[in-house]
Image (cartoon, rainbow, N blue to C red; front, side, top):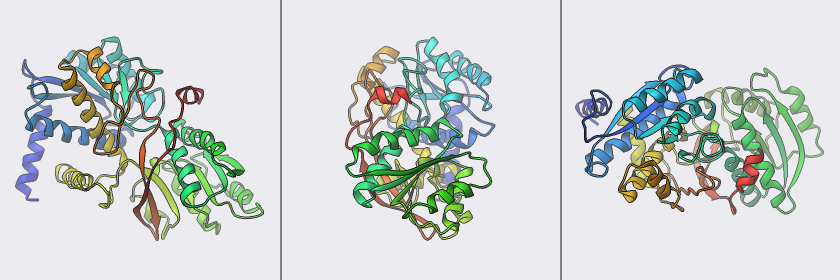
Length: 394
């Protein structure tokens, strides 16, 4: 791609955000983190959302109108999040897009709910990021953490012939617990599958030697280890497991997708994660690989993980709902979103109902890391959706 073209794309994105909205513009507000640790999660997904907005505008807009973007920085602070939500609403936002995490995104989403506007979390994976935690106008475009754990258990059972599982939970976050909750829900549904041991640790623990000793004390090595963790502690835990000579397949959630950390665990193999799309250039859908190239052209860097993709998806499904409703009225848009069943998107189908505004079932690619190199080896959709009642217990 030429430098001139890259500058042109950057200018297009600048035009989306800078300057006042025209009377006929449809305003989309991002109350997301432009500073603080949540920026690392929010910005990639927001960039993907901007790509989809730019595509819609170039194709004639939404309801024949251009989409204009306004932003406000939550500063990775809950109190500032509420202010940011109000700020973009004051600027005319019809859709309020909030941070990737439920805890940090909820204040802005609640502001949108109070104003009777639709909100979307960029990539939150807690059931609370929607109806239970915000209200009937709130959605998330990602797939629940519990689905990740359930997916990896069922896939390993069917494709790796795993029968004896060991469960190792990092208790640091609700996300980690959600992965293991989904695993716990799925395991009893797998005939002859057995939990041979379970243990916990904390993300900041420098050593998990005692947990590893208990794994090694088993009569035989487990067929698979369900590791429910995220960065930064995931690297240390995985490194210690392999250094101890444990070669069993390690399953994890999407929170460790990405190759940016693999140099810390040289030649890692037999490691598996679920992803909504592949950032490695080998997605079975060629349009995803084209999107990855476009993302690099626009931003100057490759997608860092699969958490880029939900930003694109949320704009896609919201804009379809607006077109079908022929209106920006929040209730009308919600009604159209709730009619979506296996709605095709670039990164897998999406379903919303009046009971759940999240994905309790979803198609995942299975990414295997072999000798330090991740690649798509399979794809899997759990055989049944996790019931909302079970999710609400978690």
